[in-house]
Amino acid sequence: MKTPSNVFVNQALIHVMLVISAVMSGSWSVFASISMNHMHSITFASLRAILYTIVLLPVMIIADRSFVFPNNFKNSPVPFITNRLPSKRGTGLFVLCGLFLSLNQLSFTGGLAITSPNTAALFGPVNVVAISIGSILVKHEQITKLKALGITIAVVGAFGTALFEILTKGTDVQDKPFNSLSLLGYILLTINVICNSAYVNLQTTIMIRDHVPTLTVSFWCYLYSTIFTTAVASFYWTSINLDTITWEAWYGVVYAATMGASIPWTINAYGTKLLKPTARAVHGAMAPVYTAIFSYLLLGDIIGWYMAVGALVISSGVVCVGLSKSMETAKKELRKEVTMKEVMMQDSTEFVDEVEKV
Image (tube, rainbow, N blue to C red; front, top):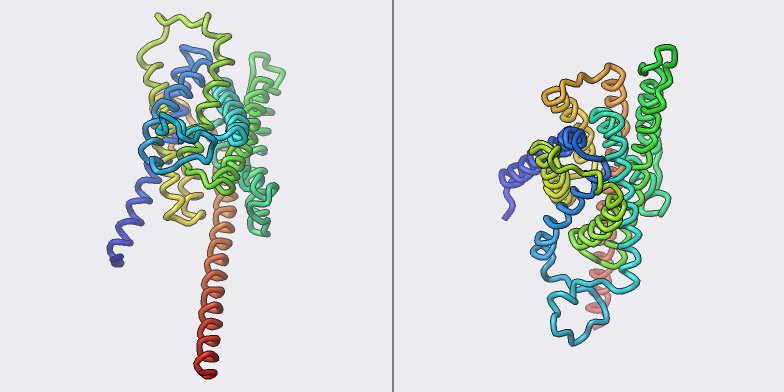
C-alpha cells in the first residue's frame, strides 16, 4: 500500500538519482577531452561504443529475459539465443537506428575534440528540443504554443551563443576574428543533435509499433552503431601508439562508457516512468552546469559570460518544452478518466434498463 511518506521517499529518491545522472552526463565529456589528448576522437568513440555494448548486453539479458522476438526460428535447439534475434524487417530498422547513433557519436566526439567540454555541453539540453521537433514531424506528438516558444528560445540561445563565439574568439591571425575551427566544431555538434533526434524518434517508433522493451532496442541499436563506428575507426588504428596512451586516457574511455552512457541512461529510463517531462527537463538542463564545474576543476577552463547566458536561455527553452509535455500528459490522463467515467455511467444505465425490463 502506497502511503504519502512512501510516495515522498520514492519521489525524492528518483530526483537524487536524476541529479547523479546529470552529474555523470555533464562530467563525462571532460574525461573524454582528457582521453582525446592521447588518441584520435574517432578511436575514442569506437572504444567507448565497444565497451558500452559489452556492458549493456548482460543488463539487457537480465532485464528483458521474458521478452521474445516474433521471428521465424521455430523449434530452435538454442531458443535462448534465437528468441533474442529480430526478424529481417526488424533488423533493417535496427541497422538504420545504429547508423544514426554512430553518426551521433562520431560527430559529438569530433566536435568535442575541436571545441571544449563547455561548448559541447551547451548542445546537450538542445537534444530535448530537437527530439521534440522530430517527434512532431513524425506525428508522435503535437505542436503547442508553449512548445513552439520553448523550441524557439532554445534554438536562438544555442546558435546565438555559437555565432557570438565564432565571430569574437581570437585565432592565430590577430586581424581575423572569424574562427573557422570553431565553426567546424559547431557544425559537428549540430549534426550530433540532428542525428540524435532521428535515432531517438526511430527508436521510439520501434518500441511503440513492435512493443520491444527499451533495453533490447538500445542494445541492438548500439550493437550496429558499434560496428559502423569501429569500421570507421579501423582506418586510424595504425596510428595508435599504446606507449603514449596513459592510464588517465583509458580511465576516460571507461568513465565515458559507464558513467557517461549506461548508468545515466538506465536512471533516465527509470525516471521517465515516475516523473513528468518538466522535472526531467530541468534535471537535463543542469548538465552544462556540472560540465562547467568539472571542466574548471580538471582542465582549468573558465566558462565565458556569454556561454553562461546562452546556457540559461537554452535551459529556459527546454523547461518550456518540458512544461508543455507535462500539460499534454495531464490532459491525456484527464481524458482517460472522463472516458472511463462515461463508460461506467453507460454500463450502469444499461444495467438499470435491463433490470427494469425484467
